[in-house]
Image (cartoon, rainbow, N blue to C red; front, side):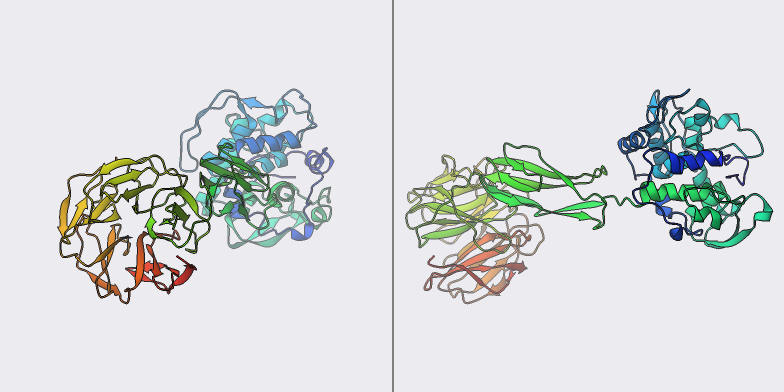
Length: 602
């Protein structure tokens, strides 16, 4: 028996009908059956379980109805899994958001939309429908079951109110009522976080007990159905108790436990690494962490949005196919829609073994798309190589960019022609300046002359000096005058502007952003081997110098790139005597970690 405390909170259905729904319906043997010892009269469900309006999508609800109603055949009305109804638009009020009515809505759509509008868990509405009318599993439904589907507005001692009849009205007003209970808890009999007298049966002779109701969700359930199961009802959890047994809240609880509460949905997916810069033919395993650890279904579906660039196996193993960018996505199999993605950039790197020692080297902007700078070096045979940056700063492999670079001063200024790929500049012995368009660490495209008269000049690819998002250059002439050449974004430059003097005898290096202020900085080493930083003003000019080190005589320095992807500029240094190449990880404000050897015979 499930009478109601108020005239407008629903009526009971027959006990035999409810028990048939719980124990006798085909396909309803619980996979994880509720256990009477777990019943807690003071905590039937959590507040989260009542108010989680996002627990199921319309598609998931439909799948659930199809499964639970598999044995249903139409009676005088369609089965709930096939039921469709025209709904009416309801404006938002103090308890529910707006509901936009529509023609021919499925029962799953109604349940989902009402849950969203009123902030009530669709799982609660499904259990309520089953508890009140057995519609979820009914094998031959009639029209009357839909008229009073949730028992709302149908008190035990009177007929049902006409304005609440019909499936949509029943679901909407029942969901809204749970929000009414929460909005005005003092106006109803049962209250959260308080001791309440809860009867076992409408008959006073059956007695009652004092229950400390722990939360609002449980208080709301008692206000909707004001009885608790007695020991006889709990002793035969899926059957009949005795003459004093009431089954409403017991049946609701067993339905929630059997159907939903043992199912732990996926709440998040984390993929590692977050991005991949690969060469064609590389194979890398992406590791997925599914949360929570006890999710019921931890399986993932892996997809690539461009299998011509990169493919992925059912286990998350990524294979680089050809030059380009692809997104690898892992999607939770449990229907929650949780996803995580990895961006894969495939370069056309041609690997090889350089002829050591290196005649010159410098640092360049990111050429592979992984957010790390590269080391550019010309070997003893005049071949130009790129060493892609790694998370540790150490070298991984070398990519052959081109031949014939003996005698050419090479620089890595970034994306000079605005095509999204970092380029290479070179000054030939005759003083001509050439741009070699980048192709994702593949062999460089054909060069284009972008300047002349650079004989005797020192070129410094300093990044974006004036804040216009275009890469610029600094140049020191034979007199020691410092000029800025503002980039046009086409490979060409605006007329030079003098920004300093007195640089004779200095070695000047691009430094990236040393102090994390968003402006490009430079480093300079004087004739004594003292190292200074010059922080950029964002105008092409620099603040007063600050000493950042000493003892750099006899070393070749390369700076201006973030080699490990941590957002701070790093430097490389080669000892001219030992030919050992060292990595100095940037720690901010022109400070660097202790040097780490990363190559020999350079």
